[in-house]
Structures are given as C-alpha cells and as structure tokens.
Length: 240
Image (cartoon, rainbow, N blue to C red; front, side, top):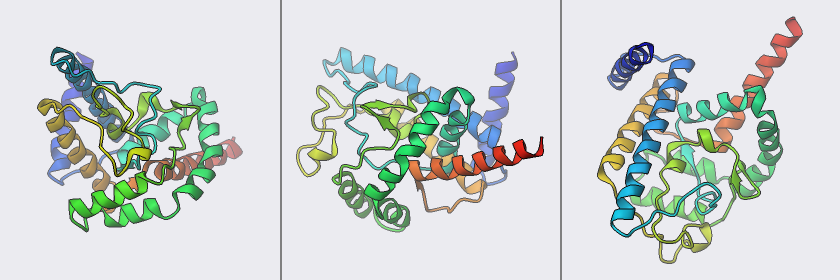
C-alpha cells in the first residue's frame, strides 16, 4: 500500500509539473525519472516479444557498443539519476574510472556537445539531426564505456534504453554513418510513452531552472554534478 500511495503522489506531482505549477525536489526528480526508466524497460521487453513473434529479433543488449559513440543529450533529471547512483560508496570504482576517462572524452568531443546544446530547440529537426549525425560520425566513445561495457547500465538514460536494432547491430556505430542505417522495430505503445517521458523530464528540467531549449551532453552534465557533490561531501567531512 505504501508503494501505491507513493506512486499516486508522484503521478500527481508529474501532472502539476507538466502544467508548470510546481518545483520538484532532487529526491522526487530522481524518483520520477527512475520510475520512467522502469516503465521503459518493461516496454522494451514487450517490444522484443513482438519482434520475436514477427520474426524481427531485437539484437540490442548489454555489451553491444553500437550506440555508445552516439552523442547522448539529456535533461537534468536524467543526469541526476546517474550522479546520485555514482555517489553511492558501492560505485566508487565506477565513479573513479569515469572521472579518469572524462578528460580524454572531453578532448575528443571538442565543441560537439556545445553545438548540439545550442541547436536544440532553435533549428528544425532535420538541421539538428544532421549535426547529431555529424557528431556521431566522429566516433567519440562514451566516457562511461569501459572495455566494451556500459558501466552505468542500471541507470542509463532513456535514449540508451531504447535501442532497438533488428537482426544485426553491424550498422549501429558511428562508422556506419552515411551508409545504410540499422533497421529498427516500431512499437507504438512504447514510442508514445517515451515521448511522454521526455516531456516530463523536460518539464522537471525547466522547473529546476534549466534552459527550456537546451539539453546537455550526458558525460558533461554528470561530471558537473559529481564535482559539486564531491565538493559538498569534502566540506561536510571537514566539519566533523
């Protein structure tokens, strides 16, 4: 019953945020984003089952790096979920590895994330997509990828949960940019939910004071949140 009451409270909070009438605490933001992720995961399981029945097996799974060179732009709640998870002492090794990998990722990405952030919401979808694909074609591996594995897999953002290449992942990497794209399986219930989830995440981003039109590169956003959280942690330790 407690879980039902909490779900109802968060559902009501989502509606007020979408209506622009509420600010959301970081804890509630993370709780809502986590529930959205769980629902997306349930939807991908249903989509995969539909694919099997249609003879169109979805080949995306942990360990496939096909999309890990693709620029991942997120709203603040998505980054907060990752940062909170990484600040757990149990994830110290993962956090340390990411912080060590970040400078190389940042150098390789160059001004790509900034360009995508500036274009978001300011140009047509086709123009933004062209820039997104151009950045993908640079083949910059995500700083969270370590030896072929996504080190934040349990808390990865919706864009990374929604991989749905059919038959083969051979055409999913940045190396295939400009050629024949991967075949994908449409699944209307999940596609519609992901669109709603993005609207919710965007609304919480704006409610927290974020730029209405500007998403952020996942690695940069999480790195910034970690720096702030670790500084606060060090300050608290000095006071003890």
